Image 1 (cartoon, rainbow, N blue to C red):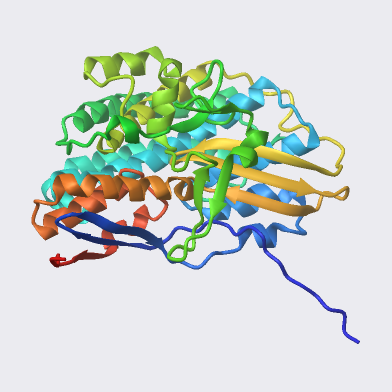
Image 2 (image 1 turned 90 degrees about the horizontal axis):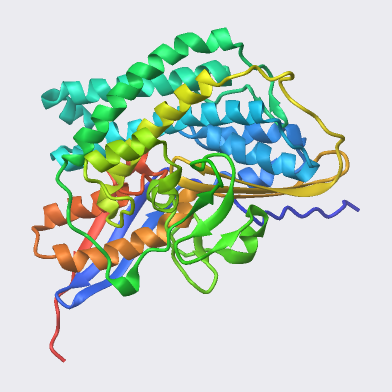
Length: 439
């Protein structure tokens, strides 16, 4: 008799590739808002099972072509937690440097290619480039500097291959980093101009009422603006170690989305990403970035999501400034990686992907095989907040012509740079106005 087998996938990787928006409203208000993510799951958590723990960084990097470093970093941190590995500061610094490259790449792509057309009144970057070629060229030039960091430290610019559990496969010499430093200094100057340009954009006015304020959630570290490490904090007093994530956050399925909705238990929606990092860690930004923000009149706390393009530009400036500092202080590690004896355990890792908190949890057995994996992407954590924004925002803009109202809704979604942002310019939207009937 054939042995019965069961395939059970408890947690599915969140895959955000294409989406749609459905809103039903009338003069009395908004009755239904659904941000639909319908691309089929890719089951990353399922097929991680049975793989060697050393494979996790390279496999999870394939989840996203825009932020593979974030997936690699959360994976290696979780594995190192499971194995009890503690890295020397030199390896932490290199990881922070490569993370700077990813922030520059991802944020610049979003600022110039995806979000700027909304503010300047174009359907996309190609149309915008005809009238504003310099803006597009500046964006590509800044992004190229981020690519250079990832290419040098990661082995290649897309889906890098040099990150491993315990460190890197190879670490550069100080001399190898010097040519990169010159490119970063030029990029930092351009990033400063980006902040000045971003602040000058026309912003819709949108502030939530006091009773409906966001709960911002991000990592926080005692002496670093958060990228790779820290505890989880929020603007309503949450302060927990990463390993307690599952005790405070819950995921649930909604019928219209293949990506799970994540909420804070007994509190509901929350907000991760650049604005959360900025609002919770302003004092950890470099003095130069705080000075530029002050000169531009941009406050230390920001609650208008349409200002997120300014916050991203400040984080790009910070990433350049931080990368230059890390290169100036660089000392080649004695070893490229450290190792530990494999044993069974469960590890937890959370880092700050460009779009926000990225949580990984893995269990491995004595042979180092992965027995369980859980990955919570930033977009799934922001989905409910995006829907709430639209529900609260629409009454303020309902007087607009339908086409303009639709554009405003799309822009509101892009404030969050969700992983579906590569396709939101092709967002299929069903905006339904229902006629009121007298009762």
